[in-house]
Length: 239
Image: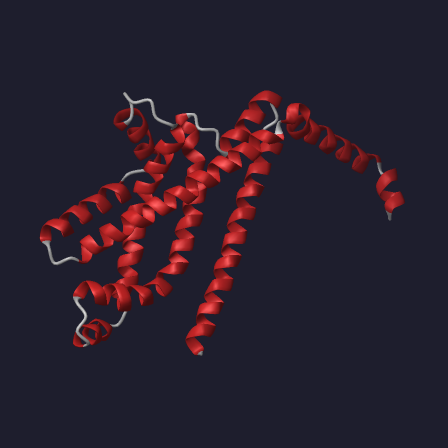
């Protein structure tokens, strides 16, 4: 079989072309480092943005669940604006308008922009998770002498977290892919790193395919971890 492989001129030619393209795009001048550094920036922006988005999401979700019309109105307005406009426009507004006259790190701008965007979606995820908890749980907590805040903290929210976890992982995956647009503010993330390689080698196929494969591996691993966590949660509920 190996003899057939090495003696076939067509296969040998394809292999030689692949080897040369690989060396040109990744080995020569250590161009693979554009992908490595870009991946680091992508993960940094994604992780910190989802943390910021989670904090904002919790606050906005409780505003939406509050009895105050003013707080409900503020939360609804925020969610409506964020969900009704493209994330790339939000990123450009925050970079060129909000921080246009300030010398601030592009990474920080990206974290703030994606955190604010994610917060609107996380708020709805959290609100849905809280509303999915049986109303009798709130009544039971209040009958035990707990305040509304204590009941939410010790009874409702812990149960809601189990319901919202899968959606939160999905939001993380979506956010990971959405960060590919940070090149609009000249931030060299994974996608931008692949594009820089393309601009230097004039070969779009290999660097962009490499970036796509890295994104695919990351999202696949996250999906697998989510599946494992969900199975453990179901097993815990059965016990």
